[in-house]
Image (cartoon, rainbow, N blue to C red):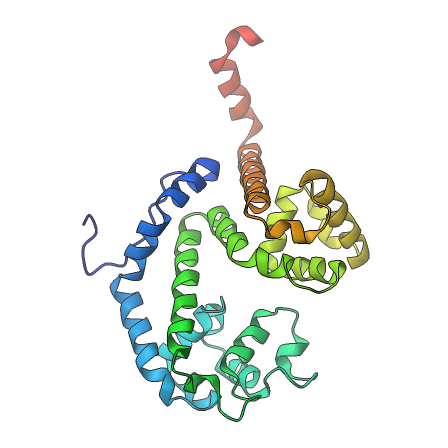
Length: 273
């Protein structure tokens, strides 16, 4: 293959925006396969699968940096790798008690992490289940690939994130407003909706009720949906992603100096002026 064996595979993303998204989708199976076979990923995931069964406490998990890297990466929390006391508390308090730390944080990834390992809330933690290691490493590989995409192109990473996360939120059986609040509280999903719906910078300064009204109103008009459940459909998600990528590119383009754009237009079509 074109990549040296000892290097980690980086996603091939020669284009951004909609063309980049189309190309990424056409080559996704091949690219993720190459990524998953890269030495660092193989070493970390093999180690996790072989070792996690010996871990019975949060203390043991946070003491092993390699295990912790995979555990956190599987939930998009890799930036917390050096906050070991904090992560240990999240895991040790679980999610059953209302005052558990994971329940007091707005970011629901901490609840997902605590639930997955269940050090607090089950008599035997889930690390003891035979398929636990492979479930976590599968999640880790997918997230790690998204991170690698994001290192090259943040918009494409956000698009992949929509595809992984939106169905879960939109298809939840909670009340409509509760589901919208989950989107507003989920930074990557929120960003996609803000850009796709053309919400201004000042949107974040509104009080939450106003944000809720505004995002619901724009979504129903611009995305042609009657409620969030419509966004569990692949076509509706793809329309949201396309809208996001187009608007994101336009914003990038506009951010370049208007002078150089005017010059380009004049040179490209002198007879139009």
